[in-house]
Length: 176
Image (cartoon, rainbow, N blue to C red; front, side, top):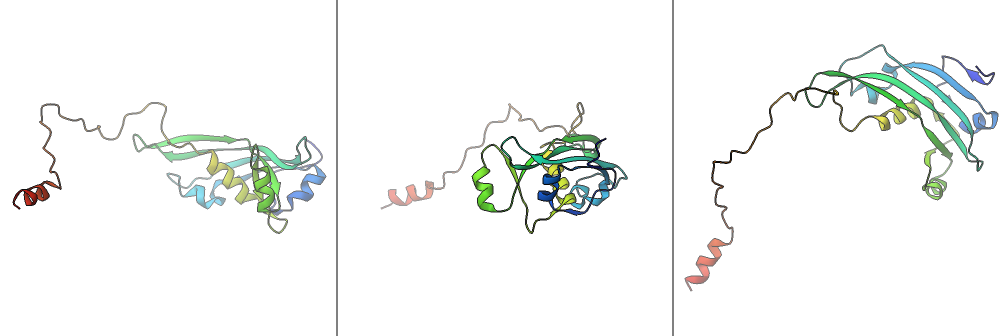
């Protein structure tokens, strides 16, 4: 454990540019209940913890960056069988800090950016955003059965003749 680390209790709000200058590493655990947008997606409330390690440093080209690891286990609804399933999220953010939209646009290629307004970052917002970005597009068990059978087309039925919306116009033209 480095002397620049802070264990367990993470600050609510930080000046990330100052932490980058100091080369700080923040480590801790935050209750999953502290993330309201993530909580909405869970099957039920839980007492699980989000494990966080964030390093405030510079890139090789001297850009201020937050990088680290964020992990948690979530109980979510499987989209196939509609039963609870455990989703393990582990994300390794690497985000360049910018103080203006113009700077973010300049760095858009090759870097994820985080806009720092008023020289402050709310760590929980940052962590929750990174977890939301790491969610799978479709939540599902490795193997499960769909909650309902798929409806299959019946090959014996003849397709219905489609009504042509212009058929009435044809009749009008012929009657003239």
